[in-house]
Image 1 (tube, one colour):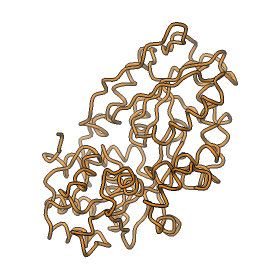
Image 2 (tube, one colour; image 1 turned 120 degrees about the horizontal axis):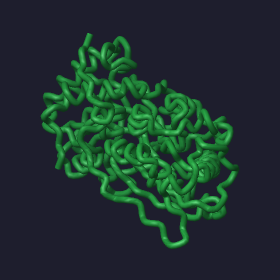
Image 3 (cartoon, helix red, strand yellow; image 1 turned 120 degrees about the vertical axis):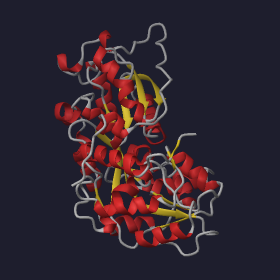
Image 4 (cartoon, rainbow, N blue to C red; image 1 turned 180 degrees about the vertical axis):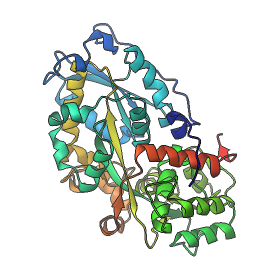
Length: 413
């Protein structure tokens, strides 16, 4: 049995990261301010069907979600100015989320009205009691959740009552490679290890606590390696931790973000990386990676699914909760949710049944026709899917990886 001295929840998820320096824009004369003491919090009374007057929403994005839901939010504001008058967006790394929101919740002075986050930020906030249990208290107001894709519904269940899934993708783990260098593409973890040992310094991945592809690779390995319990990193990942330690002997540094991984592929520093559907498609589509970069799947693997969540800080005013509920109901309609195809960043992206590619903007359809992989959809249908680790177990996995695999090798520049 592995013994672990657990870090505080934020440190287990974060440790390293950027410090959020942006702050909310001040309200213009005549506009509603964003502090929660301007209106009664939602838990002090009924949440109206619509706000008493149009509200301004300040949204914090710690998952790159604005790319996917930003156009959806804009469409809602255009269609319903009587509910939301304007929206501001801020972005930060997920490790900074608790440190940003907790003081606002504790003081009752919310500057952030809505957070768009992945599973990591969701988990951190649940651990600190930061999120309104929106599904338990107002689930009937977001009735389109009944139309979730099966795997998206499983991601929603993972969130409990504290977040609403907006976008979903099967994620990975997949492999991405430069065909000019990698001529014998690995199809198993064992072949991947052998390739990395034969080509030291040419394979790598980012710190899982800061990287979607990094943590997808981490959580996918126990299924491929046949560990005793893929859901228990502390007691059931003996093969995975041994494998990662051996693989780590071929890796000089672990970046603390996926962006550096993409840069390493683009400039030839690395030639082989673990990836996801979205992190394969989008960097090539927007020119951050050469178009000739290829992708491959392991012969036998389980998709570790991923999602983005909308979460509401505790103490939010009834008017703003009302506006957010209306917004989320709108986002979870097929015609609007199909915007999540975007540039392939979260491929496919939609979380709702019927949000098919033909409903997506023509630009997305054209981009995916050029940069998508025609075998992805069949792979998504044919391979089994599982949800990520629970929040508690994810913290343990990150903690163990930080101490036993990545320690001393973080690339922070």
